[in-house]
Image 1 (cartoon, rainbow, N blue to C red):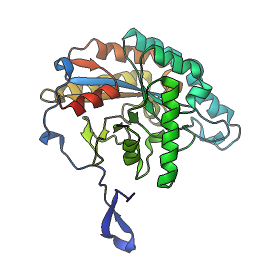
Image 2 (cartoon, rainbow, N blue to C red):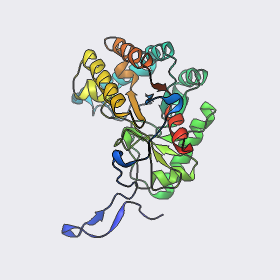
Image 3 (cartoon, helix red, strand yellow):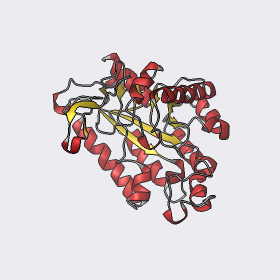
Image 4 (cartoon, rainbow, N blue to C red):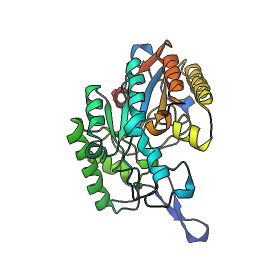
Amino acid sequence: MTNPYRGGGASEGNQPNMHNALYDHSPIISRRPIHWPGDARVAFYVGLNIEHFRVDQPSTSINDATASLVPDALNYGWRDYGPRVGLWRVIEILDRYGIRSSALVNSEVPEHYPEIIEAGRARDWAWLAHGRTNSILHTDMSVSDERAVLAEIIDTIATATGQRPSGWMGPALTETLHTPALLSELGLNYVLDWTNDDQPYPLNVPGMLSVPYTVELNDLGIFTVQGRTGADFLQMFIDHFDQLYVDSVDSGRVMALALHPFVIGQPSRVKYLDRALDYVAKHPGVWLTTSDEIAEHYQSGA
């Protein structure tokens, strides 16, 4: 398999040029209009990160001072709050508004948290492959090794959930140069990793799309990196939606909300998620959907 990102020629210092051939530049003002079902203007979905973290490896941390320790009780315990407590608060709120999750699930989750898989199956969640574990980034593999890893991840999730994933998001949005093409070989049809648009668009891999995800309206960044409050989160959510709604007068837009149960599921924050979802669920012109359905609708050409 050739490197799809590698351009010709050499750059300064004899380093090879890197040309991003995965997708073409396409200004949003020059595309055909998108029409969502029911004449909705904004397609809204929740990307719910359901992750397993290994106790002997560092990962997302709230305090870097202990991140290199084994065990790192401070940070590991913070992350572990999600599947134990935080997720169940989030599920209760999603149920209140009839919102099905787009579940971004590590393939190690079914082994460690089978009750989460059971809850998601009962609610007909869309299941996306999200790597093996968020303790390991999806990088530094040969093509043959990555093909085997991806096949194992996808098969494990399919067996556990009863649904073969259609979409992919790498741990920390990581891919190799070959990931989209290998996913296509395995029957997937979209990725969330390239957060550069408010609409789906085709990749230069036959049958593959990029569907919008977000690092801006993402609880992990808002609360832990930016240090914002719950009230800030709610205002950002409303402002984000309102602008997309204005933009969508002639062509539909996608609004993704990225959630991590160990972040948004904390007692001091979860009520702001409730208020945000109340705002979008009661707003006219909104399609409450999943990333799977967005990809399917876009690919249908409707």
